[in-house]
Image 1 (cartoon, rainbow, N blue to C red):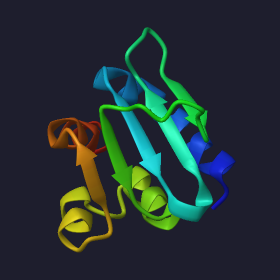
Image 2 (image 1 turned 180 degrees about the vertical axis):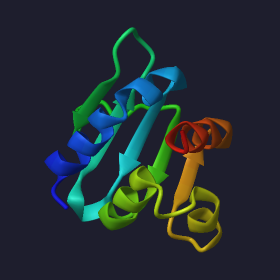
Image 3 (image 1 turned 60 degrees about the vertical axis):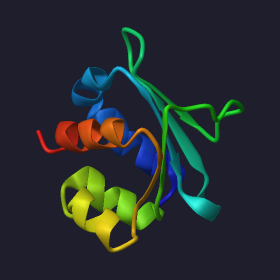
Image 4 (image 1 turned 180 degrees about the horizontal axis):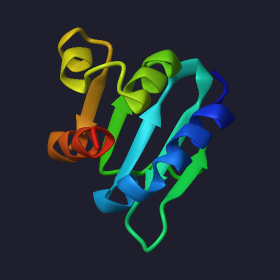
Length: 102
């Protein structure tokens, strides 16, 4: 799935993501990076950002990200199986997980 498609999927969940109130960088390896900034009034989703500073970084494949967004892959299972790596605040990653479950 192209980066633009992933961003579209994330934007469709913007109402839920607004409640995060943190920054998360999704590192998709060769497919690029997406910065989710939910610290302001509006959710900002930035492809391949110049500034990659985020409170939490999630490293996973683009395919697994689609599965996570759509609820087809449990984040805890993905983490346990090594399909998802979390750098930074694990609490923010758990909060993001709970928001996507809504």
